[in-house]
Image 1 (tube, rainbow, N blue to C red):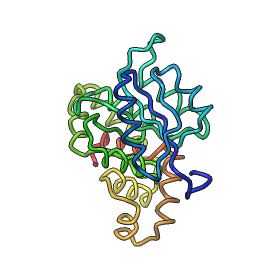
Image 2 (image 1 turned 180 degrees about the horizontal axis):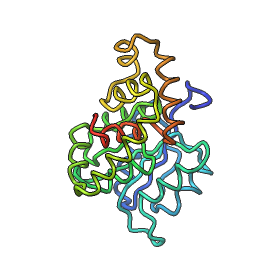
Image 3 (image 1 turned 135 degrees about the vertical axis):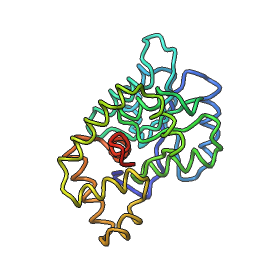
Image 4 (image 1 turned 120 degrees about the vertical axis):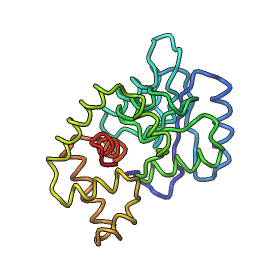
Length: 226
């Protein structure tokens, strides 16, 4: 959670294409509640830039041709392993790119296609800061469909074992998260307060050893319950 909710959302852009970096910077500067704190061209520069600029959100390209060979997936994994890491939204050109699925498992809070309209990118940044994922259900289904059957079966078994560690009420909340429902809707359907829903989600993430609700949603999908 950000220390000052009224302050502009600090955004770091990571992309090896100078035109994309410039375009995203120009685009996001038009939103009064966003502040671009930096833009780097290589996955290897991410941790240093985050330490220097302390962004709330990192917009991370997946495929980068940096000199150190560090792509967006590995950069995301390393970043999210840090205490107090910012949220990560990965960027891709293809809506059926399996690399995006791997990036989400590395701890990203969602992804955007690079042709997303400016208002969509701004809204996505706001959502991840508020704890809401930026996943498109149609794209998520395509990504899951790309998994080979053996891998899908293994993931289903592992996911069901994770969910089996939850209480009945926790599984109800997890299923609702997997269906893409926001906290307010979950609260209404399960007859609890939004604060209680947040508490359940926090406990579920701890029990399942997950970083965020995006990964929880993927677990539910993998279990065949989403």
